[in-house]
Length: 245
Image 1 (tube, rainbow, N blue to C red):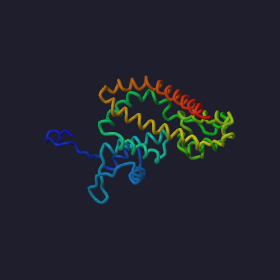
Image 2 (image 1 turned 45 degrees about the vertical axis):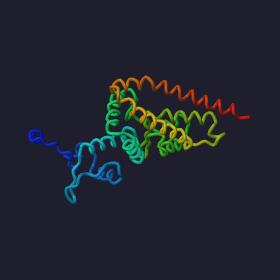
Image 3 (image 1 turned 90 degrees about the vertical axis):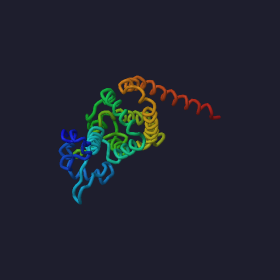
Image 4 (image 1 turned 135 degrees about the vertical axis):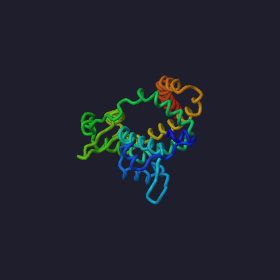
């Protein structure tokens, strides 16, 4: 690096071999090649038939994929959707700003990263069939992964949704309205669209203020936004019922 600086040359944008990526990311060669094939990781800079070099963006992307898999329990399909949305929605400047805001928010918004509960024990405690919990994982409403012995672990921070579903069943709505976990996808889709619009608004309007201040504002306003959403939902229901008859 020093020699390059003296010579006035820019650092090599592709300093890593595949071996280096494996060592630095903790992932195997086969897994990295699979991510490239699936479009989660860009191709390396080829210098020969069987030789390619990789840059910091490859290493950071691998660390992100690993974190989303092992801490958030996201399947690769969901991870690719997240990465594709990020690439299409934000400029490099906006992404840099959001990364800075995230660093300030991480401690407050990560309730229990990496912690899990046993799905069978959770279902028994809530009076649910394990099939309901498995279906919620299959629908990607709840993060979960299966161990080598066939046991299913649920992400701790998603337990609230399983508890909410158990309450819906206890109230008799699943029998009266033939509701299934798949019906929760409607709410997931609405909230996903809301988040997309929120992050675009945030990225376009807040970079004029410091990242720490933006994070502080977000933390303070989130409870207010949640109250607004609840109030608006109630108001829409009241207006709908008033319009009937």
